[in-house]
Figure 1 (cartoon, rainbow, N blue to C red):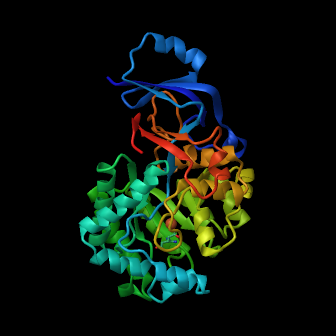
Figure 2 (figure 1 turned 180 degrees about the horizontal axis):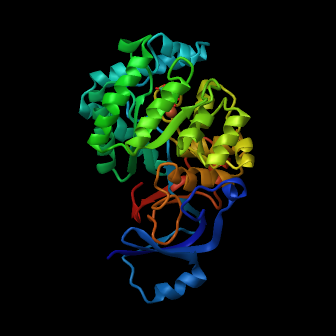
Figure 3 (figure 1 turned 135 degrees about the vertical axis):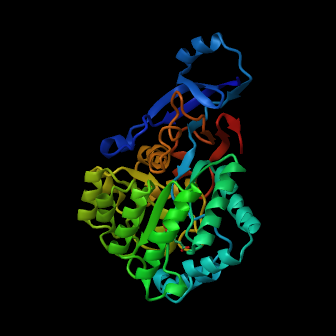
Length: 413
Ligand code: NIG
Ligand code: FE
């Protein structure tokens, strides 16, 4: 048994294992002189030093971690990334800056489709190395659990190859990685103008193959004008639900197609993006308890108005924050950047952003019972920040305020 003691910490953590919404979105426990006992990588006890001191007296510790009065928070959980790709798309970024719309680039065979070509050409090793290096960069900025989607394969073989690479990144790094199948990320060139037939392929071949492979926990679909319609998305997610996948939707990112309401209808865990979501869509999400995954770095990179986070929280929709890390619409693996945008550009309070980037994001990938908060029985995944409160993350803009990263009680960055 390995026992550790964390001391002199100003600890801020949400509590519980289900998504927080409404007023609870900003509910955070604060221990000004906090301490934590860790046993075998799990939180054994957490609380004010005055209480922990008594329990600690009867124990022997393998390590004492003195935080010098710095702020401690749970490790970030990034619940939405497309980090498994082979090549950057810097040229496309310049095109977008010069005015070409994101979806127009895709329609002309670039965008996601150029990443598909690159992934098909890449060896498994290269794809693994690229993904691992982004994941480790995210880890150095405090991400301890991460979702990664497939979706740059768009044929059965390449989608399964991506999923095994994604699993491997989790096995060979300190991070916990949650894989998502996203065969419905774009209509591939071979199926141009025949989306219906590609949806048939997904339903009849890809989903059963991904199920048999047993790696992906979730299924996600890009529901958007010119990509997958609401009807296509509903068909895919209904089939995925029957196979036991958790459901996610890229909803109302560029246009309001009714994706938010669809997420509520099919019982999705989360709807992501929602830049253009309607009031009715958000109300339906609130009614069904669907978490909104806010991706402010995408709005930033696409130069679009941010999703209406305040309206969502007021309606009672649980909000989570994620990077959307991908080579097109959001090339960042930094949760501190996203946290800062959540506070400064979307109007979240620091406490709301903290819950969004830890507990609610853990719940959105089915990991709420093991991470996202610092509580007895959960992973001792925590960050020591170069500051006194989590506000430092937004305040010290453009840098990572993360001094130390611990995964299951081990210092990993
Ligand atoms: O979430 N919108 C679809 N998928 C990603 C972008 C992927 C890409 O451009 O490569 C997103 O924005
Ligand atoms: Fe995305």
